[in-house]
Length: 408
Image (cartoon, rainbow, N blue to C red; front, side, top):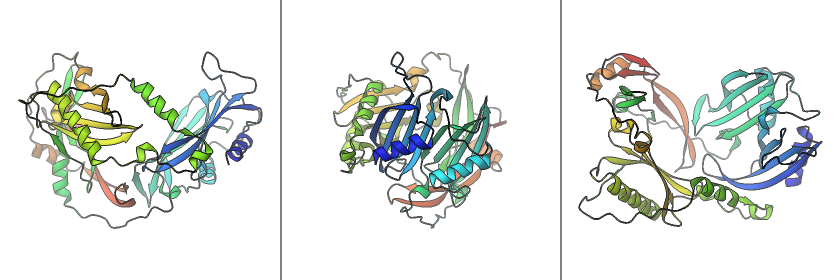
């Protein structure tokens, strides 16, 4: 199978005079947390070698999804194209690019994907597409990017994320939730701060959300009188740990047949979650001792083999200069890294104190005509189905001090 794909890419993309330098299989986690297998290939122009540990000009990278059997990436690095007879499209307009995508990705335009943006960059024309389902946007999203040179040759192609058309076994649940949208609007209009060079602006805006998705809300509390436990930090470097994890997912064709799940696709157990939350609470107890009950866990997920969590103040205004991101190794029971927003903004010493003169009710009235609900399909990670919903959004804000409306 591997040799078949190598031969196919070599022939289809005009790489007969290139040298295949690397070909490896990797276990990958899809956007909907299913395990997939990818074949990565790297070609050098004939006779070219590494230059100071960097790939030579004209290097070509390609990636194939072995699980579903289609090309996911083809990149002429830095667009330095040394192919003698690269394949050409019939033209460089939208219809030409769409026809090529439809024939290579088994997707239909205006059914599975649609144009998001077109851009000219020197001799290249760039097209950006996003996934749709029954005319609606999809979450998690799917994305296609294509760059065509003026001769009509593709020098960059990438397909990533979730396209329902590529997962025909995923059921679509057409039942849509019925909620009180006025109550939801009122809940989603929040006061927050927009950092600026000399401080921040206080604005009312809409906190984007799906109407029927209840985010996990876990408020962190601790007893200030109890002694804090020792915080165990790893001596590993984030980049190195991620690189080692990436290398660990390179496997043989025989290993691929064992169907071992990608680590990021494994559910987070209650024990792992409780342990992680305890470590986070202990860290905050040491570094924000008076803040018990003022912080909440925004999300916990598994990524690159580590547990990630975003921790935010309950008060939206406090999030201007304060937010924490934790990376935790649940296998070794150690914190790998804590990204502290307060430390990043520590040089901003003279933050002005602004008086809120506009009430939330007044802001809601000003924004009423600008707030909209956009139809979506979302993948339900618990039920493993795709279902319809709506997402609230608004491109306008209200200055909480002056009452002026501000565009996004």
